[in-house]
Length: 211
Ligand SMILES: CC(C)(COP(=O)(O)OP(=O)(O)OC[C@H]1O[C@@H](n2cnc3c(N)ncnc32)[C@H](O)[C@@H]1OP(=O)(O)O)[C@@H](O)C(=O)NCCC(=O)NCCS
Image (cartoon, rainbow, N blue to C red; front, side):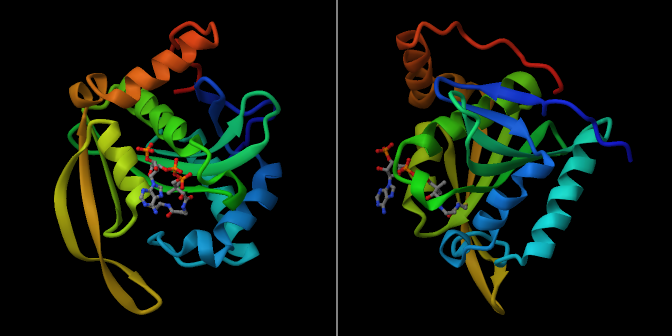
């Protein structure tokens, strides 16, 4: 399939970050993320080799060209210099649902608040750009950071799914969260991001091209 030349599609912009589609030059950073055992410890996927990272990047770029598009694998970059700080993905599902997965930041950008803004942009993409009714996400039972961010966005903890993912031959339980559009619109995370935008003199976001 023909890959678009030119600048990658920007899917959402926040106060300091943007979510954009992947480009070939993201491979080095994505290989650092997906090849790092510490970063991948809580993910449902195993650590990936350089070749697996390259194949996943190619697949994601092909998926981005599909119409209708069902799969959004993105990077989070700093608005000021386009430096990639992490990656995330959203898959569209039945019943106007979307599934958020594969969120990870490079180690040097963890504990900086970037994950909070990044997840707010995922919610804006899902509920505003893609007009979805529900977002679901899962995390390991002790991933406090993901749980706190999900709850701040208005999500409900549905429960624990036994034996959800198989890592290194062992099945592990995951927590499942459900976030409905009106819960997001009433959430403290949305208010926080709006405040941050106003403080920077930014207008509320318009839907961006390519969604
Ligand atoms: C998951 C991830 C994206 C979160 O990003 P982060 O930068 O670590 O998260 P933050 O520092 O912004 O923390 C988010 C919230 O969790 C809280 N938190 C983080 N670590 C915590 C801990 N160990 N104990 C208690 N609270 C914690 C923070 O205080 C913050 O809450 P607040 O906004 O109410 O203060 C990041 O840790 C990461 O990339 N991890 C590796 C991959 C991964 O596990 N992905 C998730 C797969 S589901």
